[in-house]
Image (cartoon, rainbow, N blue to C red; front, side):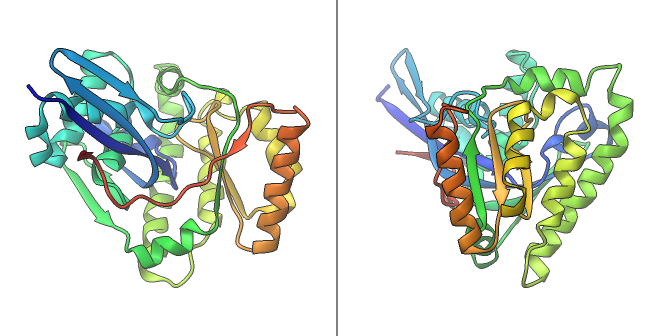
Length: 289
């Protein structure tokens, strides 16, 4: 077999991604609003050898790298899977949860496989519905987001185990119900209005951090306190508990102050691994190079 290289983008989730995960998704159906970004992972299948690369993306960043890599992995080992992208989303979920025993939702591979900015509905019967957000609407969102790696790695499967553990799951259901409604309102805000309401992001974060105390780290609390006057909304990407965070800031001058403050934190060694990750939304999903 000749060498096959497959690449796929990672993502940021604009809404809380939690409702896309089992057992909630299986019990009630889940939704997510996310965006692929122009940081790509790769898998190269050369005979019996398979190699993967994250191309400088921080490890355990909360950007959905595991789902993106596993999507590329499966497609590199069997390119025919790319002919049915919805089915590939389900196959990656089965591979992660059933084969690797790595608890994860659907959103990471969905963003990696399709690219772009999308509202995904993951139904309890296994069906998946995708509504693409037009680029014109997404551009307004993109220009106001600042993506920051905290320097603190996390393992999303561990946090999922805590949130969905038998002693906690029943308590989280009303929070996830509300998060799902907020996600649907975000979709409407992008599709049917001229301006996106950043309060929806902040409300999602307020719900997300209530799922479990481990989701909001001391670093996240510090960043919110230091820069409170420079952003309209804040949230952790992915499961939280480390990884990346998003700031939403609409005013260009305020954005400049925020970026300068983040750079100062890094230079002073307060959070030596902290860094801003420049990005653009990526409209090309998984592909064979």
